[in-house]
Structure formats: C-alpha cells, structure tokens
Image 1 (cartoon, rainbow, N blue to C red):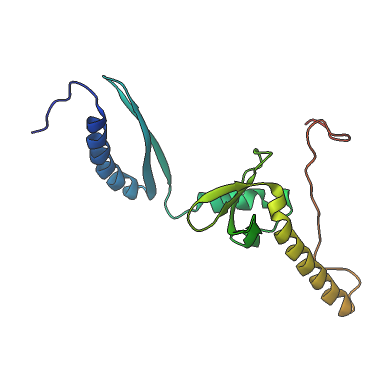
Image 2 (cartoon, one colour):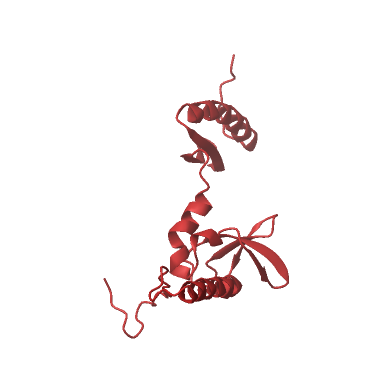
Length: 166
C-alpha cells in the first residue's frame, strides 16, 4: 500500500520523479516518443515538473541547424564539421539565430559551448574553396553556365540602411 503524502519535500519529489518516469517511459514508447523530466519546483503542498516529449530518434539540434545553416552562409553537410576556436577543437552542433553575440553551438566532446559567428570563418573558407574548385572544374569541361548557383546570403540587421520591415 502506498503511503499518503501530507507534505511535499525534496525526498518526496525524488520518489515521485522515479515513479512518474517509469510510467511515462512506457506511455511515450506506445506513441513513438521519448520523454524527459526536467527540473522540479515545489513548496509544501505542490510540485511542478517540466516535461519534454519529442519524436524518438530525431536529433533536435541537427534539425534546427538544417533550418538555419543557409542564414549563416553554411551548407547542410557542415553539421558536425571540426573547427578550432581559442586553441580548442570543437565540432559544429547547432545555430541559434536569435542569439546575436554567440549564435554558434559547438561541442568539444564533453559539453556544448556558445561561440561567436567568427568561429565559422574556417568552415566558410573551406566551403568557398570547394565551391571555387567545383566551378573551376565545370568551366574547364567547356560548359558556358554552371550547374551550381553560389549564393552569399548575409541577413541585414533591423534598422540597417536598405533594410525594410516586413
């Protein structure tokens, strides 16, 4: 028989989390989802858990990167590429366009770090060399128009000269 709870404490929250997590994992699997409990807030009479449900097997950081890569002058296959910043080797894991100072997410294998846009310069330089090489090979083959359209897109800041509000 289960003991009736009269007051919420840290220990009660821990026990509840374990029980709820066990039940939730089975429920989520039936729907093809993965479930994760986040932080809990509690007082003497209530506890609130944050809960995240997502489609199982989908890498959310990768999906977000694929949506935003062109905005930063990158290609979809740049996800996971190696870059060096501040003497440390990182792997590109994500982009957050709404973070003006540190929109680049990169991992050193242990943790994910926020980096400035300048950290992408190495990857962009390699990409430009690859594009130039591909165009050079195409024109050397005698074609008068390239198969590849190279677009250098740089979003304008709001309020910049020539920028219009939509």
